[in-house]
Length: 392
Image 1 (tube, rainbow, N blue to C red):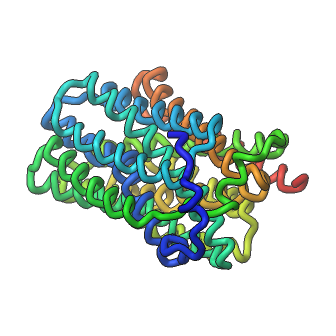
Image 2: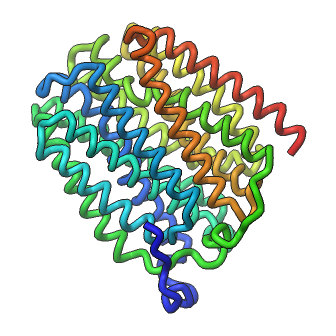
């Protein structure tokens, strides 16, 4: 993955893929595939896999954790090497498509675990690649506020995967057929984006590979808080549809929880980008953490569809805003090393989300106590961020 862009390509001025509209389209589509399908499609498909493949909640936790471990490994690779952002995006998307498609071609649990691990690593490559490629270009073009449109791709992907999961439940497609549909869609987008990407983003996107200055203390504290975010949000992000299924038996009803979460994520990033003109990235990060904590608590005390939809709105409406604000803060704290710090953030996030599902198993398989702990971690890290704002 450490392939660098050819010098002749990097020298092409005003490339087609460097126009702001093209950057938004490419970045949005890449994140929709990598995160909506490569990372989060398992969540709406878990109820289907429980029904037709006999996957238990414990096995679901292992599959989820495998994806999170892969995400961590992929992020760590990006922290110790300097892959060209364009190559990260292109090969990451091809890998996501291949591994998602393969999920529908086997029924072996051990192979599912391997495939989810690999898809997690590939999705980390794409997130780091898009962040390092798109943000500097938009900043140079004086369109930094368009970053919200780029990160709305995660919500768009979640919404798309959720709608497909809903259709699969209502029309009884089966989980394996649904995995194949998602993999085929990912392959189409991977091919189009591969052909559309012609630039690595210029000097701003590759400056981190030349920087040797160590990251500062405030950068590491912020990365730790970002890891707490990963721990705090992952339980509803993994188990919310399964929790909805436990409360409401009809798939035509409980299946709406995940699309609502995705829609909230897509819309919130656009609104969040506007709020960044009024609030600092750190302040927006803190406020969003409080709302996310409320959603985490609501998800375990939900007894009807309305409470579940409230949880979906709180979680979906904040987790990508936090991602966007956190990356913007990383760009401020990291300076020339911003791409490296973004990779550190991603690794911390991945480590945090690995702990979440493991906590469920360690505490007996229930969701209440782990979710309350997660909400407490979110609140505590929000306080740390607020205090740190006075010294940065």
